[in-house]
Image (tube, rainbow, N blue to C red; front, side, top):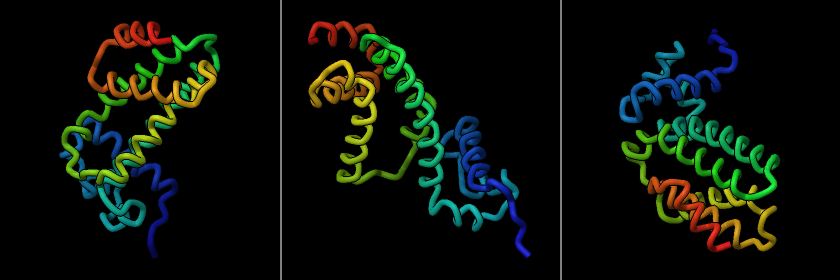
Length: 167
């Protein structure tokens, strides 16, 4: 009779997250995650079809948490400055946390899905900015600028100074 492990999917994600933090993307394997959870490799594949799917689950969980932080900053702010800083800080921390995935990840996302994912990301970042600019384009423009220049490691002050001049 197969053993039943409660919350196994959550445990697999937690184990993968810990291994990513400790050893990076290249060292993480489905086998190492399975061993860390005391299950067989096939069991992991019952939940995640590949290493990349498992890593994506880890990253999505973290991204959702960071977007909740951004939403809270937007709810508590009278102007866009604190929200922009929060978006910048969350993007920066996320990029640093998953640097090994971005550098070592071998699975290339084809152009079509990449564009869709990028547009979804931009829309998520633009959502808390919508209350400061009445049109639909400006929050997306600002979100795109923050996304691009944060990933290039431009200091927030430089980005914000320019945005203030534009608006």
